[in-house]
Length: 318
Figure (tube, rainbow, N blue to C red):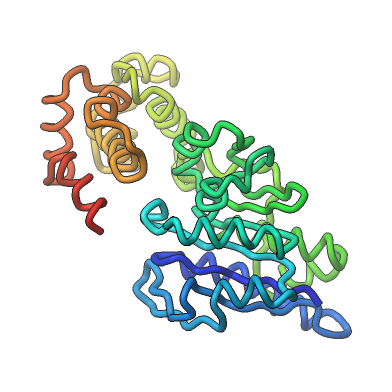
């Protein structure tokens, strides 16, 4: 029987946790005897508050899990403010875990503490799609990809909640065959299982992709050109429509203008960089397409009703 232990860091995702455990529970009902068990751990054995503000009780401390000698895989679950929660103590425990636990994994943003501890060096790995770029820039020794999940020898990583479910189904298929994995998928009414190599997302929501492929193309161009924003007329031309038609599409499907959407998109990128990197405010302004610090600050305040410095200060004191 394989034992999966999940280390919960504050503000983890409930959905990611349950999508990781429920397939294991379901698999036990399709085998002659239970083949998986699981436990929840925290640094101190106390409950951990999730991003949805649920206090989740754990069954063990990370020290006890490491010293037990019966954990086959340790999975780190992290989501919001994951850099803040990757404390020196977390890194120390993970480095110790490597000596006692065969497989280490990180789901959602849980790949970050593993990488920070140097435990993904030389491995292929992924992280939640919103963090892929900054993750890749910070950890040059990690073969970072945008796959939904990655199984690379003794390291397993996934990009988020549904990707964790894909990964667990892949593990069940590897351990006990396709029939058990399909039975689990059917029980959970999960009929869109995706392979390891499937990209997490092209940043464009699938609903927009289905409703208006040309609008999706325009948004993709915007996402690919945040540092050097394209004129809306050029985006329309590259999309194959007139600027007037493109504006009608944005109004019909998103109830906004193309310019407003582009600005908001760059603002969201700036917000991620402010909260998740140590780049200066000037550098972030340049990366998100602003040719002056003042115009960046002014636009950011208009979008989020706070200055970039306020955003960074709030994150540091969270």
